[in-house]
Amino acid sequence: MSVERSVLMKVLYTSSSSSSSLWTFLIFSLFWTSAQGQYHLIGSSEPIIAAPGDDVILPCRVDPGWNAERKTVEWSKPDLKVDTSGRRRGVEYVFVYRFQSPDRDIMMASYIQRTSLSSEGLRHGDVSLGLRNVTLEDNGKFRCFIPNLKIDAEVLLLVDPNFVSTTPSEPPENRNLITPDPQDELDGTAGSRSRAVLTVTLLFFILFCIGFLCKGSCHNKEQKGSDPESGASPPPLLPCSKAENGSAGSHQLDSLSCTDI
Image (cartoon, rainbow, N blue to C red; front, top):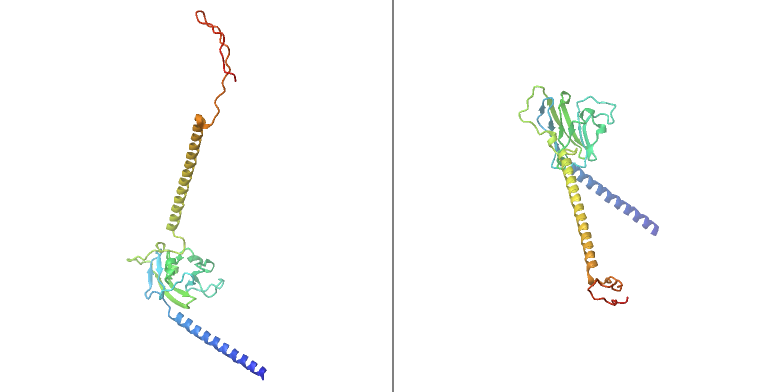
């Protein structure tokens, strides 16, 4: 009877644990689905028009704001013919950002040196693509996809040789790009020079202090050596000899008594 009761208790406990785990999984799934569903990727409702040689920005952002700095962002051209020899078959990648850096191994060679994202914008969900030196081959749709949120958006770029821009867009080089900013390199060089000047100045100050202390010590030793009260023994007295007879007209001295040493 006791054995059957223990078996029954185990079955009830297992059922209770499974039920609890199932409810936890369902609640987590609902929460995750709702969290994903609240984000939207917003591109441009109007086509971006540019002339060959222009620098443009294909706008795209996550709404509401979402930090994409440590996430994956993929830009591709869905209208291009698929190159089956690529590592990721079925997609021609214009720009891929993951592990906080561009993944150039799977990017199209013609876009590696011409595309960029804003590192500052990524922190706020701005995943706009900067494209430099636009060519006629760039004409068409660009697709932005964020795998973590499973959301995407498309931006249409029209390249017109006769187009003259009246409101030039912000050039990508003026944005805070993922690649190192030249201004940051200048700041680092100036900081290194300041530290070098400070180090040399401090070294000269230390050498000056050491020289001053050595000079003072030598001067004190010289003063002690010339001081009669310093304990130095007086010079020895030289023995005196008998005085010689004086010249004519002077008194002749028998002897000169000297202090015995």
